Length: 191
Image 1 (cartoon, rainbow, N blue to C red):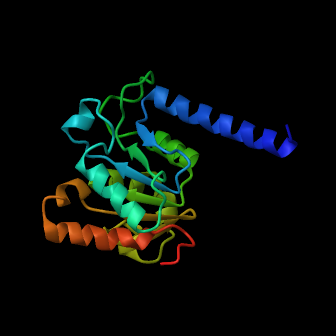
Image 2: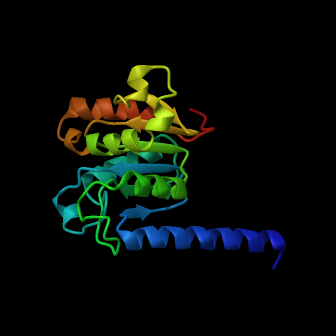
């Protein structure tokens, strides 16, 4: 095997082990860990709380369609819960918001180019975890992750929504969410 191929294989294996260890501790994530976009949900629905797939319902279907429509490949979909699932880390309480250090470790391991915060719980966790970077943003509303504004945080584009799943039942709210989401297409997309 060529040295370059060996290095790639070793890096892939190290990342897999890091993400597996986070999941074993109680971090909930699903999808492609190498996706350029991570969708973070804090307010889980009944099915998700019962152990169902994260973004496995109508919200996930709508988000997949939205991401594909703005230029992400269909396989470019990674969901992360802002709350802990079952795991072996006693510091992570089932259903409680992830500690900031665990959230940061997870997001840095995933290393996306864009982050979509689907609800206030996810935005609050991002705000608390990355306060050191957000304080450097000149515009106050952007620094506070006001819904609809794209913040640049440590080289990532971060966009907060204010309740994506709840918006699905209202045509006007769905249109507002779509207008927001269109702002974070893939880097280099022809849009």
